[in-house]
Image 1 (cartoon, helix red, strand yellow):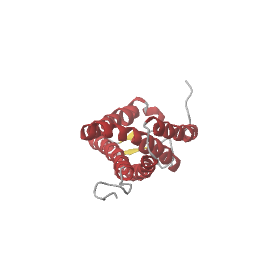
Image 2 (tube, helix red, strand yellow):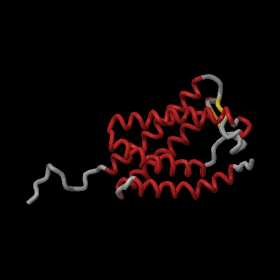
Image 3 (spheres, helix red, strand yellow):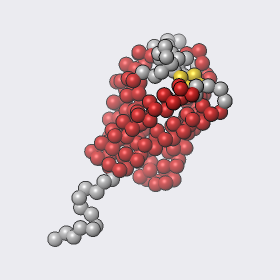
Image 4 (cartoon, one colour):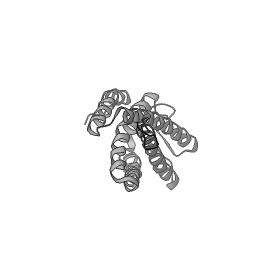
Length: 177
């Protein structure tokens, strides 16, 4: 079975990520303001991802051994992950929250909590020989990873709602002649 190198994965991701963002923008019928909110959300997501990974490496929670000698994820990887995780999935989450409000937000964030366990922790166990991600011992690294996914996916929602739902200048408090 062919295996992608980290460089090949980043190349594919740099092509697929913008396409997913565009597709999410179209399928969610996002306005320009919501798209701008998703882009800001992507930046927030990337900053949170980078920060969580630095704390995780310093505390021994998790590292990415196959990506670099230091076990750190490359900057280009954070950009790709931000476009998809913060931007594209942020718009999908926005639609879910728009439809189901707090129940939708709760379900969306619980989905990401479960995804963290299955994707990151489960994947690190199933594909340990690949060295894509390595977790430290005990439950704390797993719980920290869940907290990263929940907080990281909440940030784009806040940005999309704040920027996308801002008053455009006409509201019920102004009198119309």
